[in-house]
Image (cartoon, rainbow, N blue to C red; front, side, top):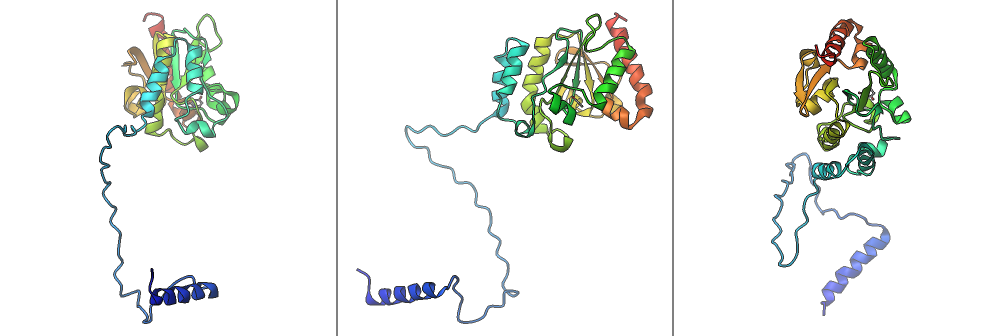
Length: 258
Ligand code: URA
């Protein structure tokens, strides 16, 4: 049972609220410039004591989930379906289409780009915009092409969804989608990889620096791999087409057993 004083104060408070009071202030003014700012220290997370019989929630591991989904794909079609069903990469939310691949599966050359741009996002196919047109010309110059059954190329990207505003891929996006890329390579069974651009090198070689890496055969995903300038870079810096031509000839020679 509350005291009469309690009810008196409560009535006063209710009356003030009725009058529109929304804040309480003191009787004496405070100079806020003299008051040291108090910064709340972030509290250390409290360990929750385990409760008998209750299983603690396990942090979700999207990379492990990608590995599981990729490993379950027995064919390229399975892999496409597994990627389409993968809901843990935020890029998917902003993309129109999954960009899986183009060209001829089983081709001796598998070319790996970075990520779809606007045109690829619309078409659902890799390398169909200006960079893709240059890529087709580059391949044609060594008598190869994504539609040539006599000298085919198979093409994909590290990321299957367009990053917003064509921004660079983020490391966690690359890590999350890498199990799918590795499975893609294993199922497509190319003889060699061509890795175009810095972000593809980051995904498959663990390093960037395409100016140093290009033209040097290396190993990626257990296969001989040739890093090359990205055709989009060659559109911006055509003076490097000479190096790209040297690399294309090296690719041609390797396939001819040279
Ligand atoms: N750039 C890429 O790396 N991939 C594409 O599919 C298109 C542009």
